[in-house]
Structure formats: structure tokens, C-alpha cells
Image (cartoon, rainbow over all chains, first blue to last red; front, side):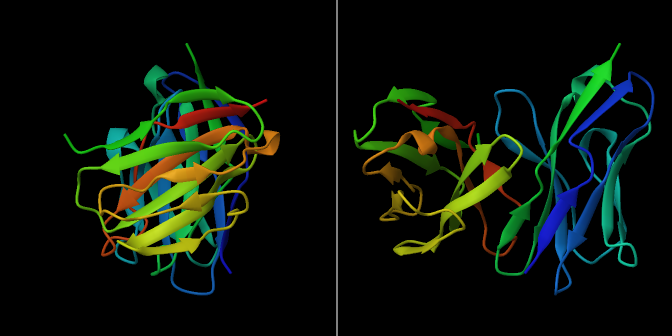
Length: 112
Length: 113
């Protein structure tokens, strides 16, 4: 069985400061890992994915995530937050069969 | 434009009144899935379909039905809705060769009184 734990339900940062959203996973296999973003009243959008290639993954809008197998983590980062980054973020683990497990989500607030 | 379209986007109904939420995608995706989103629980899968005429239960299938008669459409049916099915529902699709890379609809907010 696989699962995902997002360690913070809510993160608040000031505009221009770094963003760190934390995700730990559990999987019996070599997992694929994803981050999705959900803006208010919208569907989820794929931000980035890890599929056993480079451990540092770059996504859209300046976001990055690093796969650390020894720590079973896949934290999402961005050097400088923008007001438009305010949204809910979901960490997702998937196996080869499309069995996907979503984390409970982290709400990111960006203060001016 | 590549998209997943859900209808209706908002619906208020009463207990026991059958309803269908439609989902259509224009990307020729084999895989389609329904999720419900509830506060603090993330997204939970209701049903999924690997291709036409192939459907399977997800984690929370009770009270729901689906069908996949055409590749582009994957309707979600609530035969006898109950208040605990009040939720935000999302349809998603992807190519089976790219598991996890889902395209989502904009959601359908359902309230059952």
C-alpha cells in the first residue's frame, strides 16, 4: 500500500520569501511522485512530476521538488513567493497502474 | 483546446432524487476517473476506467455508479443521493502510458438536502 503525508495543512509566507511545502511518502515500489496545484474554484493542475529520472525536478512557475529516497520525502520549494502562488497544493504518489494516493493538501497563503 | 468538461458545475438536490454528473474529455485519453474532495481529506477516488467498457471501484464507490460507453464520456450517477454525498466532485483523465499525469475538470459542487 502506498500513502502520502503532507506535514503542514497551512503555510503562510510573505511575498518574495521562499516557499517550502513538505511531503513524505510511503510506497512498496519505486514510486512516481507529483505535485498538483488547485487555485480557488478551479480543478487541479499538474505542477511537476518525478518518475525515477533526475532527483531534482523542475516544474512550472518556478517550483522545484527534490526526491530523497533515504528520507522518503518529496518537498516542494520556490525561491521567491508571488501573490499568484496562493492556492492549495497536493502531493501525490502513484504506482505503475495509476493507483494514485493524494495527500490532504497544504494551503499556501502569500502575504503582501 | 484540450479540456475535461463537467456538468453541472453546481447543483442542489434533495435526498433520493437521482442525478447524473457528466464528464467529457477531448484528448482521446484512455484513462478516466472520478474523485470527491472533502475538507482535510484530500481527493478520494470513487471509480475509474482504463478504457471503454472497463470500469472499476476506487476507494469510496458506495452510492455511486459509472459507465464508459464511449471513450470521451464518463458520467457519474447517484441513484439515490444522500446528504453524506454532499461534496466537490472532480473528473480527470490521462493517457494510460503516462500514469499520474491527470487532466482535471473544474469540479462539480453537489449539495444534497
